Image 1 (cartoon, rainbow, N blue to C red):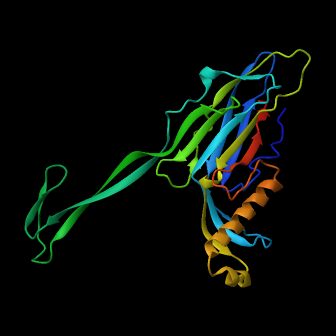
Image 2 (cartoon, rainbow, N blue to C red):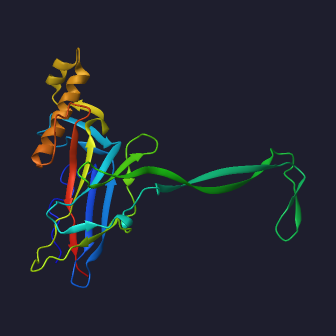
Length: 270
């Protein structure tokens, strides 16, 4: 039976979207593929009237962590884990234009072997142009597979150019790993497999930060105005994290480690 994924992308859904699923276990099928789809983008935050600030928010590094509680009868098959070495790639097309001048009276060979003379009666030279399109694979994200101190598998994502993460972490139709259910007699309870997206505070990129309250802006527009605006944005982020019941610590601390999204993998039946 398909379980509703009620906590999909709980926090700031526009900065990171996460989904996870696997086929249903059965007596005939004890090993299934686990799929995780994670997508990053830049979002605009603070549009609601209750927010004191507005800003653009993105992330430059993130960790996707597979969390299987100790009491769950689930094992990850180590040989099936997506090890890294396959960076996410995009194809970039480049158009190059070349030209050749045609002077008055010049001969041009055309397909089939025929020739003609360019008689332009002394007017300015014309040019023949050719568009050359070439494509190149560009590395978009790098991913490193490792384990946390708790023994959970972790995929660390970072943009190759050091800028914000944008796009899909990997192809979701490819399994991230295979999971095996240990035989538990008399148990029909589906296992709970959680996927978290975590980062450090210093990995969040806050741009175009503005205070909405003009009077308040006038009061902080002197001295450490930028620090006060940043503090307001950090307080907003902290409140959003706490509202969702996700893991959060002091958001003003650069090394603060926080969970920004969490999802329970869906059990899908064919």
